Figure 1 (spheres, helix red, strand yellow):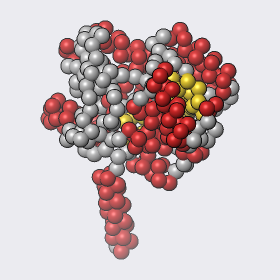
Figure 2 (cartoon, rainbow, N blue to C red; figure 1 turned 60 degrees about the horizontal axis):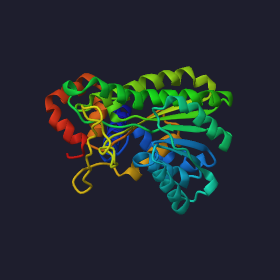
Figure 3 (cartoon, helix red, strand yellow; figure 1 turned 180 degrees about the vertical axis):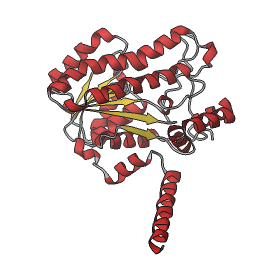
Figure 4 (cartoon, rainbow, N blue to C red; figure 1 turned 30 degrees about the horizontal axis):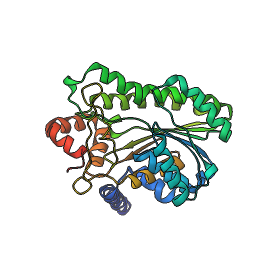
Length: 322
């Protein structure tokens, strides 16, 4: 009987510790453990990392964190001037050398240029160790008002361009029997997020494609990491799609009022996930994190809560206003 009592106490203590960890966490518990006790980012030193969408936001800060870890970088986005600014930041503040960083401007939806871009990287660095598919755009729109052309444009950028570039890079990685594919998804890739149906659908699609790749390519040395950030301070609202083709939201985030994760912190957690080859990382603070856990382990309960609290409350949580 004494042993049963001791076991019960141990279980209660263990559960209490996990609840406390969850209450103060800004990521899932596996990633929290990996960040504190796992492989350090410096293990990536010398790796060639290609980051798309690296001219601002999460992509920009990923470049800084990876530069600090000693990685060699390929920076891609449409705005060459911004890429040069990010490169200079890596050199001046994060220890990179001029030759450590290749600026490779590209429009992700010009699929016909992807193979040429891969060839350019291989000519410069001779290898690609990690591809970070970070390029993409968000959306704010009501489901029934979205023009079908907007759905097509979002899927083309957020999904098809990612698939296309990855398929161009994969043969090289498979030839050397080693490679790491990282995809910036979102909490919207795991939940039904109201007010962003096309964006949510695109992120769900990424999980389907890359979970399939994870299994298919596991015996050929390919690792897949899905990053699922929640509300983060960035400029994503400026370029977010709406329901109307050609119309951007042009919104701004209020750093004084919104409870979003700082971009630097998000990038640091992303790099911890990459260094530890975490399969899926949830990078999100409370109260979204607890709802995320409920929705993953008790999906029907998560759906019920979502419908009961309603779209306005869910939107406020998503925008960091609760």
